[in-house]
Length: 302
Image (cartoon, rainbow, N blue to C red; front, side):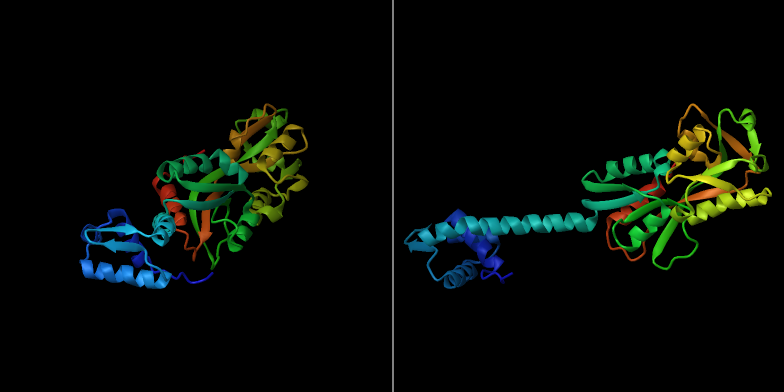
């Protein structure tokens, strides 16, 4: 891009004088004396190579060259003012774009209230919401294709990403309604030892998968996983068909399927974490705004 020939102060002086057609009035508007104004106009005319004003006793008027320059000068000044205002809005975090990744099950708990609160405070921000499981979210944060992640069971240590727990919840057993133990109010994990399991693939969220497996191992068996599904909605649908049982975070109860029963498990000390994740070195001012919205309006327990 070529460097602009005409300094903006000279353009500003030119536009004001073109509107006032009086050196005294224009100088007053600009907050300067008449000699500096005359010097600005003279320098601008030297740059253009032609007179911009015709000077006659008691009056001045625009020359054809001045009339031609005036719309472009106004456009340049208006564009700069709008650009500065827009830059300040973006820099302050009042406008801009925020890309959020979220685990599908969090649409049942954290996501709705968070987005509602954030939209009320920052209505001009463009939100790009992307559904993805935990492992893809961590990759997307590192690759800078999302700015915020809402995920389950974040890694214990990460030098590049920050995490804050926003919710913890116990596990429940997910059973076909016709299953014998579905008649109980609570289920002991060992009662599921002989059942096929439907689980999310370990690759989409290793810590959560391992936590569920640990519940089974503590009960004396290794879960026999016969079906995988990437989302909890699909897990529940497969359970409804009788393909197996599952252990899931308690918020999954909000998935309403007639043929599925959700039961508290015993012992029920284990809890799964929901966390917000972000890049520690992110300069996007919208990121701390969202974190602040989450702190001020924490999600309800499921």
